Image 1 (cartoon, rainbow, N blue to C red):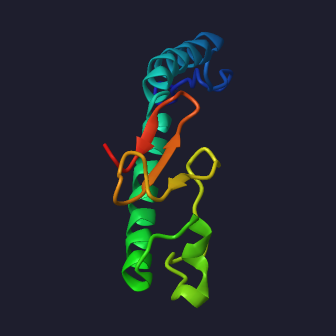
Image 2 (spheres, rainbow, N blue to C red; image 1 turned 180 degrees about the vertical axis):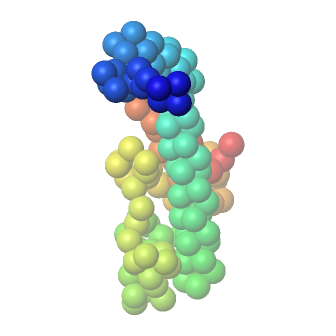
Length: 132
């Protein structure tokens, strides 16, 4: 009888207690409360970076159009005109700004007198352009 050990575990069930689960939920809530506000402004910065990239790509297409045709296009839609040597855009479409509005284009520009102006404005009022 000495060799037989009594097993006290048979009657107990294993698992997490309610206090352990509540503690984990509270910790996750605290971490989310710290992380989410810090990431809030990053989406706006990413959209502004995308707008800058789109302006660079459009500017290159406009300059290529000007080199082939001797003048700047009167609208961005002319960058897709095959009779003018186009399309000058790789995806055969004029991109919109990251806020789904068309870019503002003017040739000759009021900021670039011998060239063109290209810009867009975010809903928060940040202006992205090719003259600054």
